[in-house]
Image 1 (tube, helix red, strand yellow):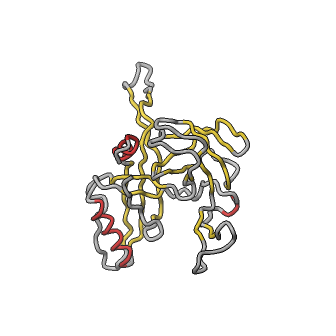
Image 2 (cartoon, one colour):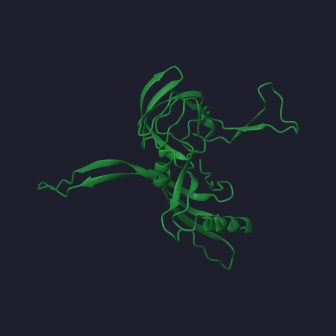
Image 3 (tube, one colour):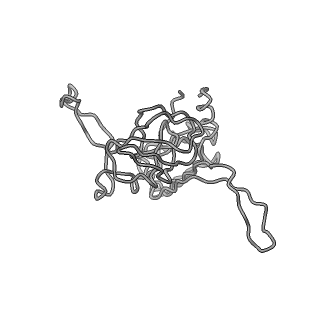
Length: 239
């Protein structure tokens, strides 16, 4: 599988993130009565807008310019965080959102230098194989909140929205998702509900241009669109 660069979510944080699936609809125009029926012909694709990213330190400027050079316009790809911490299914909902937690080995011991594993505060795994094109999946909740409706997750940087909950049997949830599964999700793999990402391209070749303000502080916005070509190659086994 091709290695995908991940946006440095801690270094380049936006003031606001707008991330959602853009449906694809067709309309034949207005009918005599004035109505304008629309028909959804595609499950859509993700669009992610990172608004007012603070770029003030030399490290932030270098990171921004390095990403811009790496992408080389709208043909390059990067995994962009969706930043859904405000709606993620944390086990302790009163915390608002939670950071990664540190845990030891299964026998209670740390690494030889005393450090611990970094582990997501949400643990949800796939239940059964999710085939390409599927819009219904089953997951098994190990450590999460009591409701998955309206949450978002990713696997291998392919992102999904959870819609209707179809069935709950113990710790196994069967839910409807959008868009459809882009590449096979094997049975029993970890799904990223804490910090989901979506593989994207820049909307425009000049999407990461920046200047240099006299006070040294810029607030830059950048727009991304889901890299459906890469996901198609991934599903075909050629990426």
